[in-house]
Image (cartoon, rainbow, N blue to C red; front, side, top):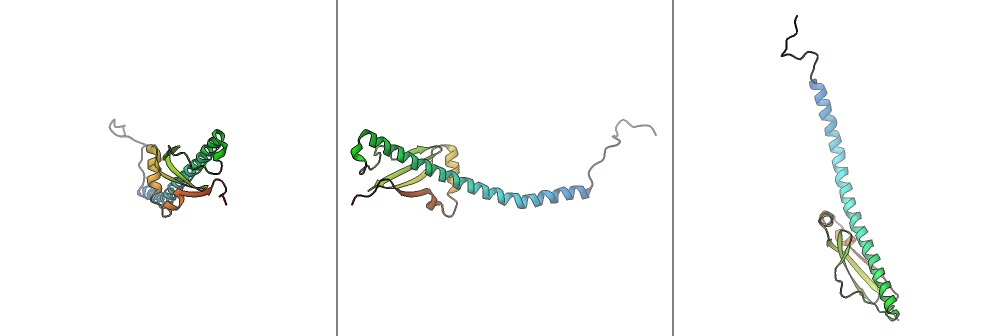
Length: 143
């Protein structure tokens, strides 16, 4: 039988069983992978805010060290840099207050679009307000 020019010989499609098998595998992967991906996104957002909090604490210590170098007499009475109510740390914005050596710091938003996106995503977590704030003692309280 002569070969007809409009017909492709030797090519076959997938059987229905093969297509259903592939769809079933994709479905199983989606059921397992999507919740894990969303959980990883939540953890990453929480860790990003935690790292911003650590960077802010580091900035407080640097400001304190600079203040002591300028005037050693402020070692036990420094109340922070009053000109900086908002401090940019990486992709985030934070603030801190100092009362009798007790520092309270908070990550209050994103400084960049990326940080804002992460901050907004993290704000949906149940313990959001607990991990955006931190308190620590900078210098001993005077008796």
